[in-house]
Length: 275
Image (cartoon, rainbow, N blue to C red):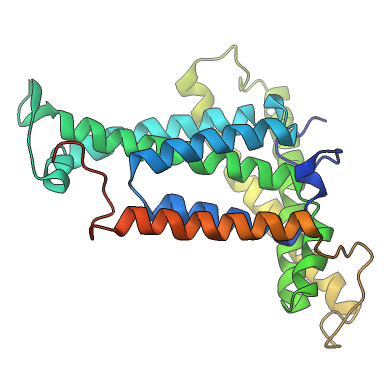
């Protein structure tokens, strides 16, 4: 059974980094994307993310399904932004350059298009980072790395279990979908888009119940084994931070600080080409 987003062991520079290093990079990278609206920084992050994506050896088939789903919700989000706040860009940039009147109170402006363009590319700064983190990080190694730098092992182990559940949930989704198709419910590419979305949404509830049941089984098993009784525990896959880890951590910290200085140097986190 094929899995979309799951860890795959490879011999790449990204895979050789410590799980702690990748977590620090991922968190600071996402924080940078969330705080800045500087188009120049966002475009640079997209370029860097694309390079890292290629280096990591991530296969398109691993992320294509999730990527298409994210794109679908992204289009809905941008459409909602325009209909509920059609002049948000004008308020942000302080000017108004009209392109064309659409209908009713809706007029297309350069400022609104530029604002929504920034929102759009924000997704593309974070999406590759999410994919790369999930497919290049061994959950066990990540947990041991976090515990090695002082994170309580119960928190580290909880994060490990969460990452390990992703492929399990995917497997369960495929099983439920196959069962639905066996009953004559069309969920493949042969069906209509709206019908497929509706039929796929039906899977959410049995998937949720199945996941809750799985969590209960794991919790009981861990409790029976005395998990959390002692303050420390040993790790089979612990990895020490090496020179490349320190280099990457230093780089992402410097990058974050530099982007924040560039973003807020004038007291406004929005890059304004209309000024």
